[in-house]
Image (tube, rainbow, N blue to C red):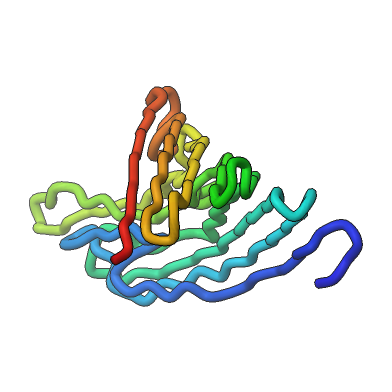
Length: 192
């Protein structure tokens, strides 16, 4: 969409069809996912150029999932599940010539609300009847994973490139108070 504020403003929509998984999680046996599960997702994408060498982008997605499972296992299905993700990226090019610096703040896909229906089975009574009880489990995790990424790439010449990337992650796996994790990556490429 053309406008005077952003160089890019777009909307994204799509369908994710999964077989034997739910929101990219797999399970098997009595806890397996046996039906095709569908997620409808929608996204907003913005890009703002400050000058010819720097820009700011924002991407946000919302997903709405609902699945029903076969009745021959413990997981029966879910209520409407909403998931979100986002990324804010600031990019600067040509700081020292033929290089690029990125500062990115993001959250990977996270379930915001929704419940899963499971069936728990008890011990049989004296008549051989096996009781069961259905339960709802909240799928929202206790924390919110946040990633801060700093990366720098430099083209030394047309055949040799170097890169450095640091990723700082808080509440990894969306588990609250899991601590801060830091990764350092050094990359290089040579073209012959």
